[in-house]
Image (cartoon, rainbow, N blue to C red; front, side, top):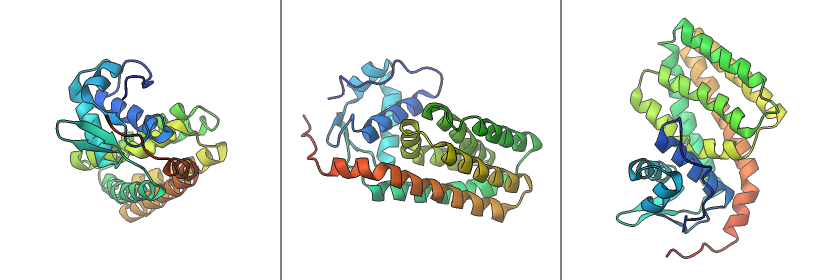
Length: 236
């Protein structure tokens, strides 16, 4: 049922599974892939011009994010997403990222701190930019901190739980005011990490992700509510 999916062309550049997961998540959140749609590895691999391995990895990410249910020997099926699901994902992200910020504060280098502030400067230039450019800078900031935590497992978990937030932000741009507030909060987090203030870095990151979660639920709720009012299509 995914033969006509607009996947945006062959995957290039980034880690293939991450790109596939993001594009599928975007299609699910936009309603292009409604609840009940079968996500078959072979069809998706052909659509994305990739092998089945990154598709399989992407489906695992979607499953962990609550966007799809992987069934042995049958691929995956798109699940019905609710505002509560989105809120829960951001809550989990807040828990993970607050810890990654605290851990990064204990290992930060001048070079890494400088990079965080450069990303903030870049965000200041993107207040009216397309969603894709905004989210690229935003995710770079968060993933840089996760990487600086020194924990590969934590870094991987942060990326995994970010599938829904990244898809939402890729489809719906922040307003200029949103970007200004996000930049302000990012600078506060970067400052706490540079000062090696573990507690403040943890508090500010948690507050920031919770703020982003409230914004996401507010923006997505009308679309999710509309989808809940329709019956999911039967799987083949």
